[in-house]
Length: 143
Length: 476
Image (cartoon, rainbow over all chains, first blue to last red):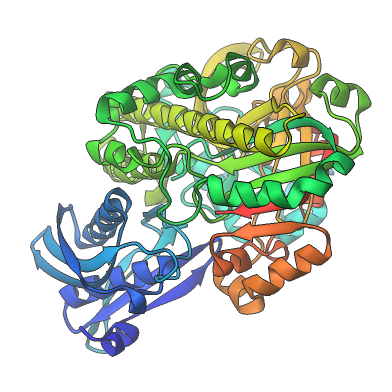
């Protein structure tokens, strides 16, 4: 996934004291992957994060919306524990299970323009929808 | 909101009448100006909380209230376990026991200013802060369990700080009821390298000077004098607290469904206090409180080491340590009856009045110090709890200024470098780990802390004792 697709595949939006993240995709999986890119764009400049290593994440949930929150929070936990940031994501969803892979590297605060920590992905404005033939996955994150 | 849409109790208290599914009325403590500027969503959230089972007296919001996940920031609510009361993750938040600790230097401004820059540069380089920072100590799982049980008391035993510090922390530095077994392995793993770190966002380490005293007697009891210099730390329970929040948001949201609780908003994530899920959250959340207390204790130790390096003649002693994202078991009188309640304070400070046994000896007659953080450019305040506050708000007060502008908007409006330069022009040294982080925290993106504090004072939730203004600030 190149930088251009990353740029066009996600966005952040204003929300009160926090920030909302939104991923787009032609498939649900792609929208989830791009939502993760949006999440990391809140913390660092992801265009500066090299894809040197990868980590796998497996989560399950009762519904797709909760699955999105679980996926993002599982990534945040890996980042916190291993001091890593990611810039490329791949997701496979089967029913209520998700297997994801994230590519990135150990955090370099200067080179990655580290910005603010994210405490957690929340249920606020949590939604998965299809519009104009593409999937949109979003929620607000607590910073 | 339109003040006329409330039932006015007095100039600083506005009631949301009990209607529909509400078990109690709502009460917002604020001046007419703050009510007018306050987000309509606060009313909705106050009403949602009023519908929760077992709620006592009223669903409250403090003067700095604004929208939050589930509860408003500034939301206060107490629940009785014997009346089917619930415990809610949305009533505590992600940063469990985030709080403020203030220490006295024993020095005055003129003594500090010549070495201020050296001090703040040392703080900046030696106190771990910002995204991905690591603490100076690493704990294994069994050490983490000890820390979660022992709080600041554990930290002192490990050599961080002195025993005398503990008397000046709520619950003397360690809450009962912590159950490390209810804290996930992931949460513990996240904390291994994060003890003694400040974090980012609105967390800070600040050198402040007392520039106004409102209550000479209480100030004296606290050892505050005009021009005296204090140091304040604002931080919380770090990755462990965030993970507990994440874990229990899910488990309590599911529990709320299972128990068919009348939840108006999934983020109110609640379970009956006496249910296995409720007990598990209380045990984990209490462990999170102890983690925050231990974290601030370790930072205190670091701050002391640095301070003594720069000012060998000074000595840092505790003023007080408050937490503003908690659920605690406390005794309160409701309709003439003394009850054991689970008091949620989310972005609200405990403000116990005079006579409470939990207070250190020298404050017992005066009341609990209430530490209210401002912004980098504006004042912070030290208040004191009142008997009236115990009666009307379960001994609670505001916690800070509260944002008035989104982070995105703030970044559009200001650049971090300009914020630093402008504050330097006002005589405030700022060191930050991220310029964009500083822009987001620009003083202009917050409400007027003075209006908030004056409202708490006039509502008699807490009384003003002193105002402090920043001399130097390290941002995470």
